[in-house]
Each structure stands twice: as C-alpha cells, then as structure tokens.
Amino acid sequence: MLQIALGLLALSAFAGFLALCLEVADAYFADYGECRVRINEGEKELVAEGGANLLSILSDQHIFIPSACGGRGSCGLCKVKVLEGAGPLLPTETPYLEPEEIDNNVRLSCQVKVRNDVKIEIPPELFLIKEYKVRVVGIRDLTPDTKEFRFQLLEPDTISFKAGQYLQVNIPEYEECDEPIYRAYSIASPETKREEVTLIITRVPQGIATTYLHDFLQEGNEITLNGPYGEFYLRESDRDIFMVATGSGLAPIMSLLYKMADEGIQRKTTVIFGDRTRNDLFYLEELEALTQRIPSLEIIPTLSRPVAEDRWKGRKGRVTEALKERLKDGDNTEIYVCGNPAMVESVEKIALESGVPGDRIFYDKYA
Image (cartoon, rainbow, N blue to C red; front, side):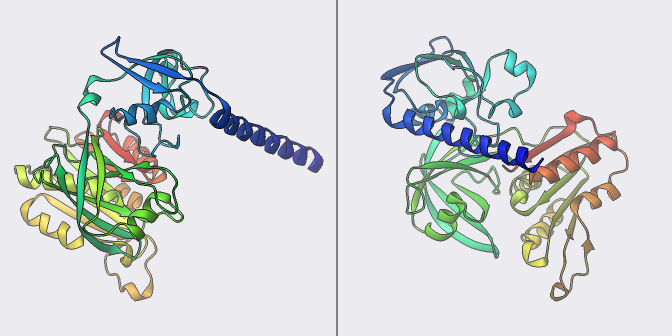
C-alpha cells in the first residue's frame, strides 16, 4: 500500500514538473504574434501580443475585470464569456463555475491564455471602471498586523462608489516582486467623501502585496488604484440587519454604516465584530460614535481567544456563536457578512437555518 501511495505521489510530482516545463517553454519559446480580442460583437477591438492571459491583456488596455486575488485563480471573480478562441476549459477553472456558466462559455479570464484571435462578451458597465492616480496621505497602525491607509485622489481627483465596494491596488515592481500585480481591498470610508478613500489592509505572511504595502509604501508616495467593483452594498428595504465581520472584513461594514448615518437610515442593525484577542480589534471608538448617529444600531464585539492581559469583560466566543444566539427569526432580516471564506460560509449556514432567504444574504469572501 505504501509503495502504491509513493508511486502515485511520484507520478503526481512528475506531472507537475512536466506542466511547469510546458509553461516555461510556452513563455520563452512560443511566438503567437499579434492576436485580436473582439469585445461585445465588435463594440471594441484590441490588438495584443499573444501568450499572455486574457485578464492581463484587458488590464493593459485599461479594461479592468474584477479580480480579488490579482489573477492567481483563487477568487473566481474574473469571469467573462469567451465565444471563440479560448481553448479547452482548465481544471483550475471548474471549481469556480456553475454548470450553466460552463454551458454558456463563461471562463476565468486569468486562466485563459490568448494564443489566437478571441471573441468575448463583458458587461458594458466594466468600460466605466477607471484607473486612479493617488497619493498616500496617512498610514496608521490599527493592530500589530493591520494598517489603515488613506489615499488622496489626484487624477481623476474624485471617485464615485457604492458603500461596500472594493478597489484594486496596483503593486509595482519591487525587490520581492518582479512584475506589477493587482490585489483587491474593500473601501472603509464614506461614499460621500469622494476626494479620498481609506483601505484597511492586514499583513499576509510572505504576501507579495501586503509586504509592499506594510513595509515599503510610505506617506507621500504615489500609486494607482482601479475600480470600483463589487455587489456588496446596502439594499433598500425596511428589514432588520445583521452585519458580521472579522479582522479587516470590518472595512466594507464601516462604509455601509457611514452611509446609514449620513442618510439617516434607522433600520434596526446589529453589528457583530470579532477576532482572537483585544489587540486584534480596532475601530471600537468609531463604532461607538456611530451608535450616536444611528440610535437603532447595536455593536457586539467578541473575542474568540482572549488572554489574561486583555482583561476583557465583553462577549467571548466566535462571531458565528453570537449570531446564532441573536438571530431567532429570519423572515424580516438581511445579512451582510465579510471576512475569511470559512467564516462567511458558517454565517450563511446559520442564516439559512434561521429562515433568512438566500437572496437576502450578502457577503464578501476575502480570497
């Protein structure tokens, strides 16, 4: 049995090595010449050197497709309909595509190599996505591994977005990264503050993007953003609201709360915000200030692993436990949840079991 397992492991490693060799050979030796990308029945046509993936080719031409992972194939957001020229569907795409999407030629643009002319369809509103030149005007430590970044808009000098949406940050080449990459981060600031945006970014160990943002980016530096993207925004209704967040998942929740405060929305709202220890929580004073502007707002901070030095007198346990205790009847409830995928899926399960219809559960999974 051990020999079979070792044989399978060796075979898998060999297959991986061959795939890597093919990728290297494709990158260095293949010459596909100029390829045409025809968009929306000829509404727009691009010419690009073949060999790159569709996501990067579109981005180079300032057509920005949503991508929370920056093209690593781990978020499943960069979907486009490829009518001709895409090649076979890859195993890296299928986990992110529904059967009807596969039947309708939907692909992950980061996984589609452009080796010949292609025809695609994208939503017309993506042509409205803009690139913004910004200057860093403030960097603040919120926790030992989370920072708040404030960016002043330079060109264009204002931005329009819906509270809850996200932007992509262009990480330039630096000593840890030999090519520009994009990463997605939710906007934490009010949508009424159009000349400046705030992002909350947690360091990822050995993360190329967060290493640059935490260790290299300084006040006064200029970088580029693009967006806004996303369908995580406040729906118009009079239903009760539960908002659940962990870590930097609080960012879009803050933007939603600012919207409620600015527009005088007084729906009964419960925010459950949690992390491991007291040092991991932030914006508690800002949340308390929002309760003065939104009398119907209740904040429930909770710690899953408090330590003695925290001297924590508040709620203890996971955010999912707090939600299960408080959510008794989902008939008149909407759920807004943001954080790591496992937490989001647990919240969704609890909400469905409590009677919240699936189309009233809105989430932003951080890839």
